[in-house]
Length: 210
DNA sequence: TGAATGATGCGCT
DNA sequence: GCGCATCATTCAT
Image 1 (cartoon, helix red, strand yellow):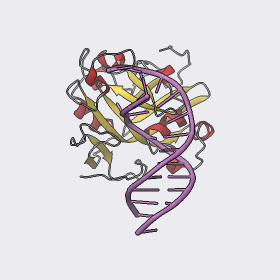
Image 2 (cartoon, protein in one colour):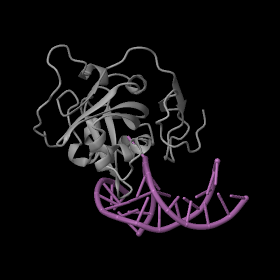
Image 3 (cartoon, chains in turn green, red, yellow):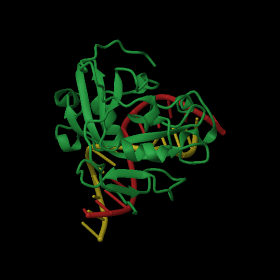
Image 4 (tube, chains in turn purple, blue, red):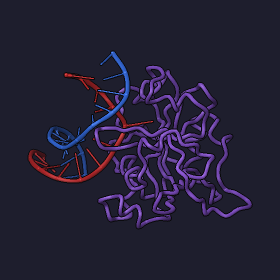
């Protein structure tokens, strides 16, 4: 968890950055409210941002699909810490997934960021990704991390600092769709996947119930 | 248009 | 060794 030294070009004064209190609440609540927020990453090559449109909740040791279900390990230890940190893990030999740790310290839970709409830093993302089409750049958790250049090296980053964080840039309501989570075996009954119904950037439709 | 599969490497039993 | 919070490709309908 290196604290990358990068200069923030965020304007001083009134900040839109979400604070610790946003994350240290009920995971389902945080998951729904993350929709429409902007994910910002100060990549070594420049600023990248995207509007989050699809998430999933993984909640505590009683959720069999949650990485914390079988206790604390080196990999998942970030989830047991305070909310407002990044939990990034390596999966399927070639992809990474980005999560925001939620709930107060010792309660292991997180929100998986599954898809977003590209905003700033398009060229950087296109350089990082073999995909050139904007619509496909961030439409899936593995692709999102690849385009952003996020890996385990960034796991544990404090989202209240200036490298990786969330911003509130819009007001108004979002029409939220609710389905089962993708790609899991246990806990598949829970409707803990949330997405912006108006967005076309959600991950490819597989077999969702609603 | 949807199901099946291979790629690829780490974390944990 | 086995399984995995994925994705792109291949093959069948």
